[in-house]
Image (cartoon, rainbow, N blue to C red; front, side, top):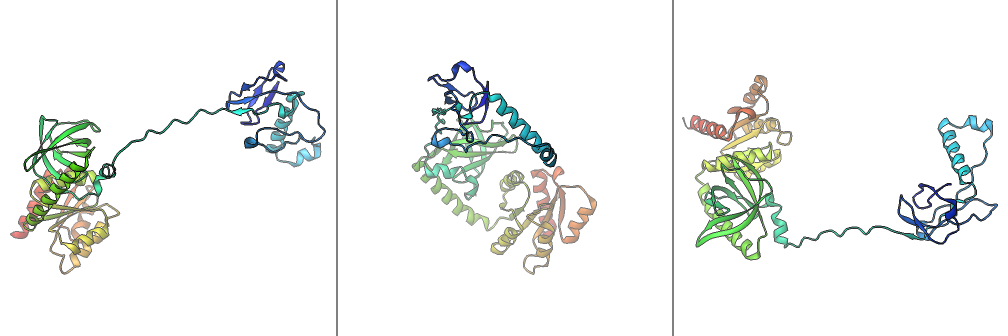
Length: 354
């Protein structure tokens, strides 16, 4: 005979010989341990008995429906009531309370793996929040591969390399400092052979972190003094990875590079320290490059900045709009490598001097 489990409401086919036995059995749906008991005659509504934690409201028998009332209700409701009557008729002598929940058996949830790490190590995962400073020194990877450093922060290091590394792999990095190399572990965040590789420092001890901070502060102080004589380039908008690749090449060529991801950030940087060159991602909605270009050209102190529009489309009309707004040059992304961008900057600087 067929009945329902009072816990999960699953239909169960039960052998009549099990009724009245003391031993329980498992519901195949919810794994509750159940016991079949004989029906107790009752004149009132049918009820379901279970443990307090899984108590369910009493169920009433389905009343008969007259032909007139049946025509008045929607077809969907008729189908539901007909299904209910079929279930009740199949109970054939067993009440819905024939199954009493004796025990709910649940598989214990697996314990979450606890990773013990210092606050400084957790903060190192957010390397983008750290200030990056130029670091043009040779760095040794895994005691065998020599690469050229580009910039460094408390969170990681960016280097030039012609080799391919597997993203997510762990490497040993030897950073040259006064008095010998400084050895740390790092994971490969991203790698593009012939362009650059991003490394994130891991498992830094307090002593290593303190030494790294001191080194960065020293480099930053030295770089700040050198920057006064270097051209500053502002890369505004666009894809972060593309900006990082262009930034690496420009730093390698001797430029000081800053980044902005919004219109307001561009204006803030211009107010704090006006860059010599601004490269605008022309289609970036956050940067609003056309409006930025127009306002900079109208500003009495900012209007001499070299402005380069970097567009995602090769379209003469778009190019004319950029030049009309005041761009000094118009480049398309698909044709512009970091080398070509650096060459265009030199060309624009030479025109201004000439």
